[in-house]
Image 1 (cartoon, helix red, strand yellow):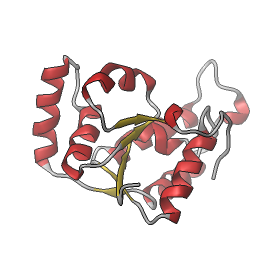
Image 2 (image 1 turned 60 degrees about the vertical axis):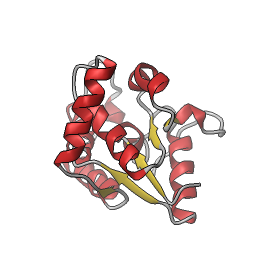
Image 3 (image 1 turned 180 degrees about the vertical axis):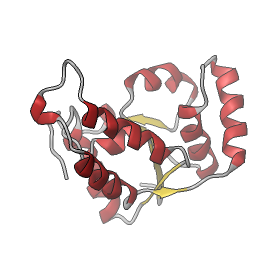
Image 4 (image 1 turned 45 degrees about the vertical axis):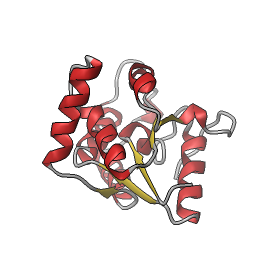
Length: 158
């Protein structure tokens, strides 16, 4: 396994919020921590994680009441994720992300910044975002989906 890996916010949120494939995400995290793998994400990562957790604070019409989070709980979970992931990157990631978006006909640079960072670090990028994965996987060999992890489906949380 590489000494460095890039993760996206969809995968990282599964470490702290019980969702489909949380057990696989936690298993990956445990393996990386055991092997001393440095976990990276681009500067947009904290905003994306915060946005995902805010959805659990607000709730929605299909969310079970017991799945909602208080603002205090969401903040604590954000802190937990932030303590695991190292933020890396600069303006050059955005320039590369824009190039990738133009090549792939993608509407925004958000997801492409994760690819740009993985390219720069020459490491795998792990995601749990199926829509993103299916859209760019044909172009990005370093992109791995949580479903590529050999563990069977399940749920767990930190």
